[in-house]
Image 1 (cartoon, helix red, strand yellow):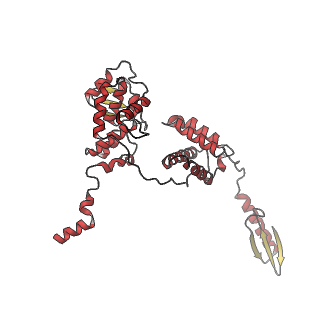
Image 2 (cartoon, one colour):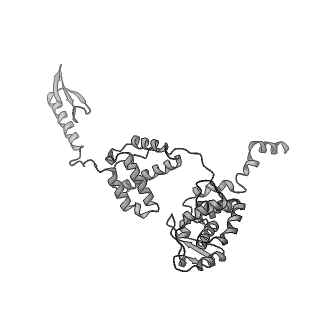
Image 3 (cartoon, rainbow, N blue to C red):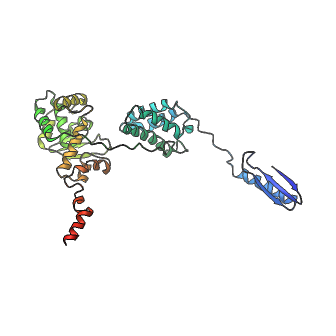
Length: 331
């Protein structure tokens, strides 16, 4: 930067932020004016800078994952599963300084995952990564933007959720009394009659079961809900000794269901939950009520069953343009 004379004028030629910064050139009549302008620009550029600029965040991605897990992961359902996803992600991107992690690196990781897993699973894993950075920023552990924010989910074709048909339900219900493990049989029946998750039924204690009602408290959404049930079912539960009514048996139950009903590969006890919701809607049940009974976290989850309703989109028969024109022609 300098003040120099050119012809009959004085030129202030300044780069206040260094050789690679913005260049400011101004012409003046006198040298004194050019010098004052130079001093003003320099003072202004100094004033705009932080007196004690913060140091770059040099924490590794693994350090931030530990913070997330210790303070948030332990408080949510599936926190351990999410931690494993984040650990594998961290290893795949070579545990960089988190502030240097780019959306391109995350996108490349997702592309590699898509070679090994389904698109829906890849979307779920990306949601975990996004969620971690969102939480860290919200809690002010980081000040930079979420590097995964701009990455969109892979669009996938919505899949039909399998459920047991009437014949399969009949076979299942008729065989439950003969099952050697009657505790497991009762869990199966509870899931079928209330649409609860297997873990919700499996973790029930005696104090949550009363005549004609079951209260689920260990839920995925952390919200308590009470579901009315037939007295026969609650009486059967209360007949088991001990405060903890059941023991873990989902793996055995999955084997039993698959053997008894010859289900497609990959089907788990979750099919009982889908069966409840599907038959509830097909029987004319209200979607808002359905959201509350099995404890869906939002109405979008419930709407996945809307197409099974008897009246689903029936207005298409009367309000399509051909039907409307035919009514006008007949009028």
